[in-house]
Each structure stands twice: as C-alpha cells, then as structure tokens.
Image 1 (spheres, rainbow, N blue to C red):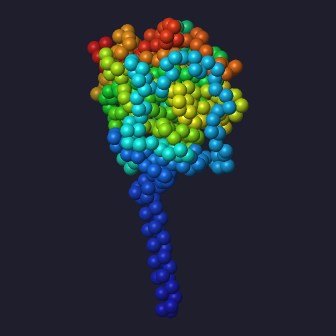
Image 2 (cartoon, rainbow, N blue to C red):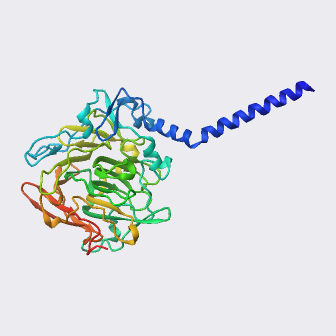
Image 3 (cartoon, rainbow, N blue to C red):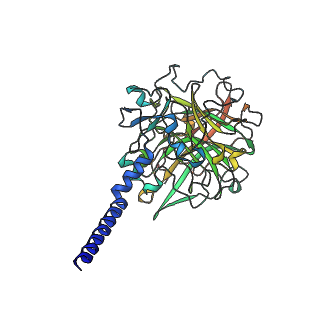
Length: 426
C-alpha cells in the first residue's frame, strides 16, 4: 500500500513539474526569448553604432532567408545574370551625394567598423523593439489594411488620376489614415524601377505614426492577392525606437496579411552584400537651404533566373527576392509608384503634424522641398526608360502635395511633401 502511495505521489510530482515547465515555456519572458532567437542569428562580429544599434555580421549562409523551407538547399546567386541596359548613363550615380559631389559614409554604423567578407550586416532586434510591437508574432510586419492596401487603386482613379475616396487603416479601436504624395505608371508590364531619392529627417508627431519615401513594385489586384516589393527610407519610432532616417525594404505576396516583412525580419530576401544593413540609419541627411543628400535605388527582375534584385547606388548590389515568393510578380509588375507616405492617427481629432519629405511643399524647390529624380522603369527588353503616362496623386494637397516635371539633368522628376497640420490642413 505504501509503495503504491509513493508511486502515485511521484507521478503527481512529475506531472506538476511538467505543468510548471510548460507554463514557464508559455510565459511572456520565454516567448520573448524565442522570438529574439529567431530574429537574431549567431554573429561572427558585432558592431555598435553611434545611434545605439547593434549590427551583427552574420555568415551569409546563416541569414534569416534560409529559415524559409524553399531555401533550405538554395544556392546563393552572388550576382545577377544581367543588369538593365542604360544603368550607367547618368553622370551622378553615387549611392549618396552632396551638392559638392563628395561621397559620405552611407550608414551611421560605418563610423565604428565594417563587416568582413562572407558575412551580411543585420540590425539586431532588441527586447524593446518587440515590446513596442502590437504583438511579438507580427513584429516587423505592416498592419493589414481593411481597405485597399496600397497607395493608389486603379479602379478608384478618376480621369485626372486622382483617387476619390480616402482609405482607412483600422488598428485596434483607433482609426489611422495613410496619406500619400506620389507619381505612378500603370497599364503595361514592368520589370523594375529606379529613382534617386532626396534624404531628410521628417518630424513625427506620434510614436505610432511614420513617414517614408520609397518606390513600390506592384502586381495583382488591390484585394487580398496584392504582390509588392518596396524600398526607400523611413522614420518609424514604433519599429525602430527612435526618429532616425533609415534604409528599409518590404515585401508581401498577399496584401500584408501573412507573408513578408520589413528588412531582414523574416525569411525571404537573400542578402549578398557585407556593407549595407537593412534598417540601419542613413547618414548624413539633408538640411533646409543647406547640403543635400540623396540615395539611388534600383530594383529589377533578372531575365534569366527571375529573381528581383536590389541595387543601392552605383556600388552596392544588396541581394534579391527569389521569384517563388510571389504569384503575379513571378512574371512582371503591373504598376510602379514613387513618392511619400505618412500615417495620420488624427491626434486629438485633428490632422497630424507629421511631416512628409522635408516637411515643405513642392513649390519651394531645391534644397527646401524633397525630390525624386531620374525616375525610370525597366521594360520587357531589360532597358531603363523614362516612364510614359506618368500620373500624380495626393489625398489632400493642402497637407502634402506633389509636382512633376523633367529636364536634361534630372530626367523625369518631382518634388513632393508637406508639413501636415496647418491653418489649411485640419
């Protein structure tokens, strides 16, 4: 009898320990640890940036891309088979340039070191980054929109290229508006896009708002099957924990629902470059009536392998999105957009004062308003061409506006942006 009672007590103790272990594994601290381990791969070397970022130099074969089941036995493509024709026709092709033509350090962390060859630099995710997210599971992903997810829905454009109804992004119980000032082309098959983008540090009113300037490569409908590849610069306190201007990328194959992410925060993008870190601060930025800095971004589809490549400036081939990630973009894009986007959370029931671009309207011009210049598309013959039938769009031109033109030096270009809330923008 005593033996039976002893065995029973032992079984109860084992069950209790198992329950305690299971509970511990489900605890917030344990979940946080698992997510951080998933995001942060073992580093060969780590570099602390002056802005507080930690840049981990991760062996190229250990980067997050290879968590994807379809990339388990992937052979890394170290260079594209073909570049678009006409890529080096411009005289000003530096990754970042000043009005005096000098080439600065491109990212702030470069002041404290570089990653060795054979590694890729990845911004380390920190505990506070995950705790700021709406959920740890969705950290690094955009909030799914309940209406049309991208900046322009072709079915909602009138003859002048203006979208009549504004779109709303629902976040918990709050209503947040996305507002844009963009140029776009549609109605053809596109195999890439390029732009040189003026870099600023716009002021953000609320931590859950952001301001970005980017290009979009779009395919599919504007419903649940949207494919998008995006790249540019952004200021996002919610994502990064500060107000620095940062290089970013994003991709999705299902309208921001379950696929894709910012930068290297999920499997997908295969980086080959050891010098540029996605999500790291761009340095320096432009100043009003002072020195102007810009970055050049090219994204195009390799005609042979079908992968979508990204080049940063003249010298930095960053990597590629494998074509299998997408449905529509596995073939081509049906729309290209360039321009700015902000989130307007309507603090206190009025329009946000979050700035777009430089925070000044297009009519102020060079060194005061932000610009995109030398905007081009890649056609079916893998040639860079000026966009035909360029349209422009903004929801509220008294808050943020866009004005396009062209000339011999800048090709097709536009100024865009604005201050947000003012006496004319409520």
